[in-house]
Length: 230
Image (cartoon, rainbow, N blue to C red; front, top):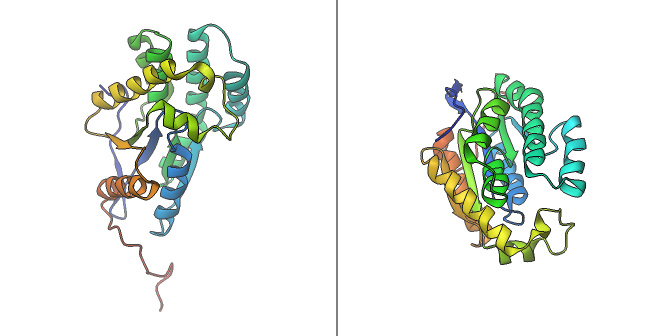
């Protein structure tokens, strides 16, 4: 069940939304976020991008600790991830939504459930409470879970710098993948699982269709100029 909810705001006929893109490392979250941002901008919508961890100045410091150094205590990681999330919601997400912008978040609440819960075995009820405190009454309106087999995801990031969670092996990644699917199943009204092993254009098409339905906009970009001629 979703632990944080909010009523959607509507301005100029479009509900303003927080879009979260979730999935294991290498699933294609950043690539999809790039494409959705471009797609939304062709429809003359105002977009704010963020990521977890690292969406704020404090978050960047926490990201360095969490992804490169880290600790050997899973609960410490959970608390640091929650701290990063709370800061991002306070500095980035809430202000952007209040200004009528659409926010795309590369990772969000499900990471804590998938990694710290299913990956490391921390109690889900504790992690749900951390998420509830961190999200400050704001919950994603649309969650896109990119589902990819760990072997495929690992190949995709082979040429990149892997973080310490990526190095934990396929068995760990399989548990994390199961955690994402479990989290999505708890939120059937807002969470949608997309096959990330499909060709990129198919993934983008599925995501944009879901987003179109949520925003009540057409797939075709607007050709209307920014200012009507007088």
